[in-house]
Length: 222
Image (cartoon, rainbow, N blue to C red; front, top):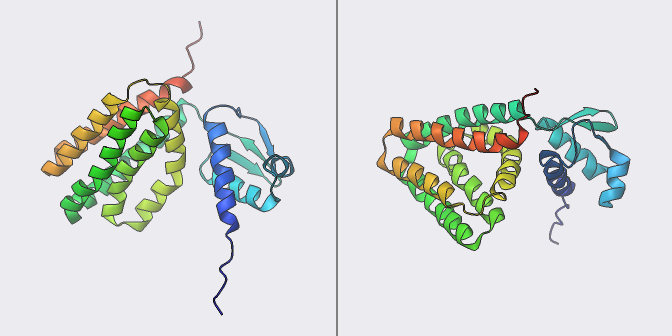
C-alpha cells in the first residue's frame, strides 16, 4: 500500500501571504490597518490556520507587526526600500564573489535563460513574466554560490522585492533599458573581472533602488 502524503497547509499560507503582501506593498492596505485572523479567514474562505501562517510569514518580512490574534500593517516607506537594497547589495555581492570563484562558467550559463525570458517578456509587454525572469536572473547568483544560509536570507526578502519590482515594471511602457542593464552585468560576469562586476552590480542595484523608492518618497513640506 502506497503512503499517502499529507497536504501541506503551509502552501495555503504562502498563497494568502502572497496576496496580503501585494496589498500591503502597493499601499492598498495602508500602515496602521488592522488584520484580524477571523475576518481574513472569512474573506479568503479558509480556516484560521493558513491565515496564521501567512501572518507569521509577513511578520518575518517586517511588513506587519503582530499582537496575538490581530496584526497591524507596517507597510513600506523610502527608508525601508533603502534598507532592503543595502541588504540585497551585500547579499548579492557575496553570492557573486563565491559564485565567480566556485564556477564562473556555470554562473554565466545560468544567466542566459532568464535573460532570454526577459527579452521575450519585454517584446510581449508582459511585466509579470519580466519581473519573474528578473528575479530568476539574480537568484542564479545564490544557486551557483551554493551557500544555503545566504540563500535563505535572500528567500526571506525575495517576495517583497519581487512585488516592488512588479509594481515598478507595470509603470513602464518599454523595459528595454532594464534588459540592457542585465545584459551588461551578464557580459561582465562572463569576462571574469570581479572588480568590474562588483562596480556594475552596485550601480545596477542602486538604480533599481532609486526607481522603486520614488513612489514611497514623501514630498518635502513647504
